[in-house]
Length: 103
Image 1 (cartoon, rainbow, N blue to C red):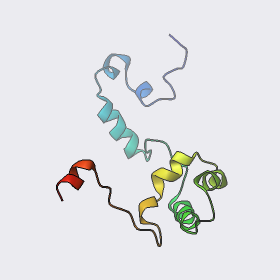
Image 2 (spheres, rainbow, N blue to C red; image 1 turned 135 degrees about the horizontal axis):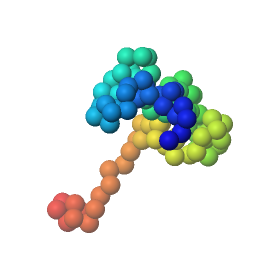
Image 3 (cartoon, helix red, strand yellow; image 1 turned 45 degrees about the vertical axis):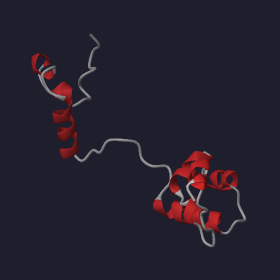
């Protein structure tokens, strides 16, 4: 057993015989009560998403250029902006062979 390995965690304050019985949800609730939230902080803020949307709508920048500007990968930009609702662009309805036959 490591010396002091439990001293920094929440479980370290609970006796060894009881710690294994606590469900993870209880430990998460205790952490939230102490003001801690879980998960990774988003790399792109709502303000940066708005700026990226305006850059995309201006049609002067490629997705790669927008991604490089914000130091993220292009998939992050694709995930966060509305490419199908950009200014002046209408989406075309896709027709399939089956829909053409039914007309």
